[in-house]
Amino acid sequence: MDDSSDSLVPKYKRVLLKLSGESFGTPGKTGINIDETIAIARQIKNIASQGVELAIVIGGGNLLRGSQFTSGEIIKKTTADYMGMLATVMNGLTLQDSLEHLNCQTRLLSAVRMDSVAEPYIRRRAVRHLEKGRIVILAGGTGNPYVTTDTAAALRGIEISAEALLKATKVDGVYSDDPEKNPHAVRYEKLSYVQALRDNLRVMDVSAISLCQDAKLPIVVFDFKREGNIERAIAGHKVGTTVS
Image (cartoon, rainbow, N blue to C red; front, top):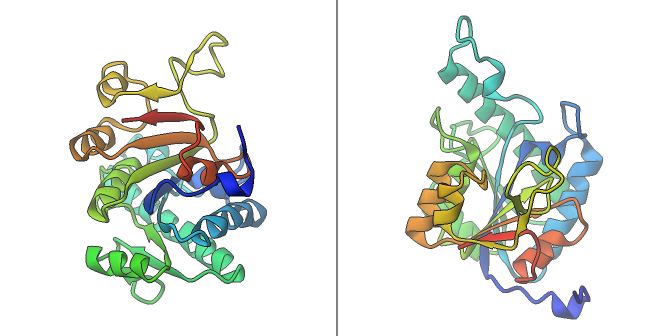
């Protein structure tokens, strides 16, 4: 693979990047790691400097997961999900300041209203910010409980007419089985939506894949930890797994 800067010409004009909460933390620990966040911000800056219109949906798993409160005896599932949405806003604020530290123009939009720290999510407003060259950070999921950030990413990608949904993960694609448990697991380069759903390959949750299938929005799953992989994915290089 030629990774020279000349070869990294963007294939997509507008993309939706899905970052998990773990992207902002130290592996195996909770909280926010500024060094990790800055490393991601640098990759994002490089993409934006090439004229790519970039919207980012972020998770909050490094701070809190709704599944932590599984018993439902004290904290209800609905409440836990709202707590998770607030965690995504905290990550969003961290990423926003990290990007602005690198002189990037950003806007943080939240599906959960908190006007003192973020703009409310309005589709037309998000698109207008993208058209003006601003990096749009989308926090708060969809604003509704019982909906994952994967589904939020698929929904927002469709709403803003993104050309691809890039899912940045800690593994280098989609496997036939858990590669950490099964050394014989096979990594796919390409998958159809139907196969991903039929074989329960955990690309994203079922609702997210179904939304992308209906909208014909391709999903690229790749390892964001490798420096430059986000740029390679946007350039259309063979990184990770493409579901289309």
